[in-house]
Image (cartoon, rainbow, N blue to C red):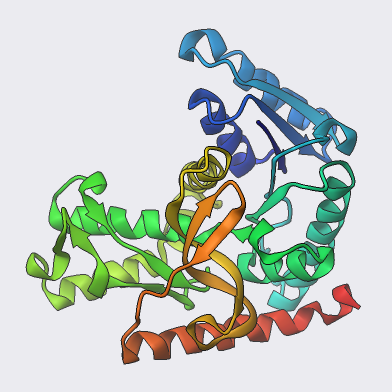
Length: 311
């Protein structure tokens, strides 16, 4: 199984590293536009092989898409972060052009690949990739819900004082500070609702902390996080390549599900060898439905800025 990761920055390289040492794929190709950057990252990872015991082949390439041929999964992390003074529309315009070019190039050499979108704004870039490529919806996956849910479970575990692996929780909606929806009502600790252990005030704080989880790390680090995002992508890729049928919240094109159409938003999906294999209906209550509709309105407004790129 072969995975290509476009963008060898912190998130892309971490994803390659996790895929390698966990043996998720037999081959990983890192690609970047910066001369020698992907090659250097790949070499650094490969020099861990004897000490960590993995057998995955990792290679790097400077903008040579022929090296990505016959990839089963392509991960797109490329794009720029929002800079001081830059408007949201400017960020969308720049990253939309980058993501569209990347998607077109990878499909020339891997026409059957499943594409995982990481670039921000993630829901909008997922929608762009779908519309620009014309691929069926099951083959275009936005990964934001996987990351947001891992952060949600972390904050729940901290509040509970219990291991994260004993906690279940899910975040749906848009992948943004004001658009994600941590479903505290459905979160559980070893099968028991977390509301049995935590007050509503504490659960509200957990939800609020989750929603600004990325911004919190940016404030602490001075840049975007990379360990959890990279690992979340690898987790998603693992479910695809090994047909694990895991339920993972992902951004996917909705066609009437959850009352929304012609938009990519995070909802619980079954992820397997065909990509998005099923969208699950988890029966939201009225308050959650209202939040989901509000999230959709915000993402749809951002999608309006894609007209120039898609025309």
